Image: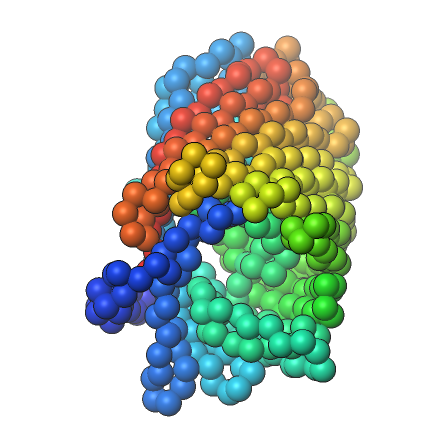
Amino acid sequence: MNNLLRLLFAVSLMLSLPAMAQRAGSGADQISSMSGDLAWLPTEGELFGLPVNVHGQTTYINQRYNNFTSSYSGQNSLNAQKSMSYTWSGTLFFGARIAPDTDIYFNPEVVSGVPFSGLVGLGGFTNGEATKAAGAQAHFYSARAFVRQTINQEGDKVVLENDANQITQTVSSNRVVLTGGQFSTLDIFDDSKYAKDPRIQFMNWGNMTYLAYDYSADARGYSWGLAGEWYLDNWVLRASRMLAPKTPNGKDLNWQIFNTYGDQVEVERQHQIGDLPGKVSVLAYRNRMILARFQDATNYVIANNAQGTQAINNVRTNYQYKTGVGINGEQALTKDLGIYGRAFTSDGHTETMSFTEADNSISVGMSLNGAGWTRPNDTLGVSVMQNGLSSFRRNYLQAGGVSYFIGDYAGPLQTISYSPERIGEIYYNTLLVKNVLLGVNFQHINNPAYNSARGPVNIASFRVHAEF
């Protein structure tokens, strides 16, 4: 599989070079005035009589922090000494229209990187790409391989422009879209114009989606499943069932989709206020798999003097349900300025299925285009976040238990001094050359991993992002 993916990367890059050279003088590579997205160069054509397109991206992110105050450290604590982290990713987006309303897509991806402290010590990861990184050696894998079927009904015509995983298509404002195969739950749910993609917008996980949304995925963030979307003018209803990992935060998926799974449903309402777009969406999820309950794990720690261990591994015996609900809103205030906000809560009884070490989270922020200072291709973003734990997870940590990504236990009197984790983030992007974005980012984290005895931590970052 790795050799096949390497071959596909090499072939697609060779095929893309003539198209890139031919279009080098076009204006299609401007950054969106509201989100900071780089527009994609038109790379559509035909192959064996079928409409096809090819796109690609590569992103390098480098993050650093200096020594910070720490009264004590445990096995899952963020290293208090000066540290550096990086990730590099490359993705190819292949698409083909095999029937008038049927598309297939395949996204091979390569990632390398070293996350801070082996990806422990924080609730809100500072780099949304870090969960894919498994060391300095590059790893090739399939990120997406899915089929999309569009069922148009009577309604206004809507043109979907050529994009990554989207061949130009005219659809109805009243339509049903079915997606089946390998993809990320976040490809379908919790979309945001201002805070979604760590490659070009805010980097922190709490700005990539709701931090407390424990959506079903493998350790890289992808899964297999079926999703349906019903678009009805300004309304959208979405639902999906995705495969769950065999073990929490594992790479291997459990294909018994009727026994272990992640379900979600979302309702979205788009609107305009004074001709300026906005929307509100509500999302709920329910996971089912064999998970540990924090109350059982806490009892185990106390009864067995098992402080400093991942006692959740010893009480994972029965199927459990994990649920949560959240709301997301965004609104353009001017043609250059937009705001957004997310809030989410999960039940907090059970351990993490995939990523998140948070049971409630809230984030708000703004995105400003640089037209006001004669830099229309630049974007400034500012955000604040707060993440919290349920009483069940908190009691487990304070009893001396350790979870996957957090747990500062260092002795009987050195468990966490609980306080919500609070994060401020600011970034600035500029178009360095055609299709190449340069960005800087700063994050200030109070109470890392919900422990007021540690921090604050100041993280400075830069990134380079290129597309074709």
